[in-house]
Amino acid sequence: MAAQTPDGAPIDLAENKKRMLRGDLYYAFTPDLAQDRKEITRDETPLPPKAATEEEDEALLDDYPIVEIGIRADYGYNVRLGKNVYVNANSTWIDTCPITIGARTIMGPGCSFYSGTHPLDHRVRNGTRGPESGKPIVVGEDCWLGGGVTVLAGVTIGKGSVVGAGSVVTKDVPEGVVVVGNPARFLKTIVKEEVNGAA
Image 1: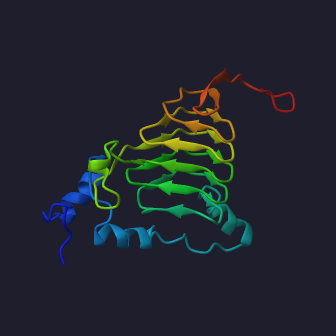
Image 2: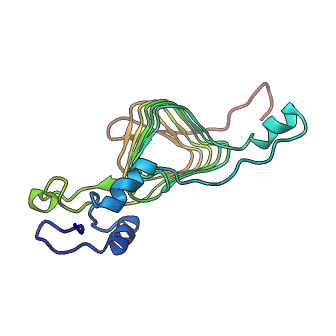
């Protein structure tokens, strides 16, 4: 049986998926998207060929992201991780729309990224039969998200910023600041630190 809206109209699956990626209202429980959620990554990029020595082999993977076990993603193919990103255990990625994490960003365990959202009106929301939508999430380069941080749809976190553990980020965060709390609020601007006497 073809996918249908609650009022029985057929759903164009290709257009429905395009609507999802644009952040427009779409139907999440169509057969194709349900299958996508089971296959998550679809990344067929091969690893580089083995190097001559173990040290050279390890160097080939230096800039690859590290993702610890316990990851949960809706689709996976809408998650983009930059070079040398570290994702600690038990992360959740509701990647209705693209979620982009900049290079060298690190995050503690239990971080969640929710790019999907639902209509407020329950008559439109209609459980699993109604449409949903979303907005992209962007985390800049060199950020640090403490354990248990939640980032909501449409949020951009600026380069080099820090989000305190347990914070819920509901709006954009500028570059180079620390935010904490629920909802996350400005705490301070980050100043340049010295390491072993060198700036």
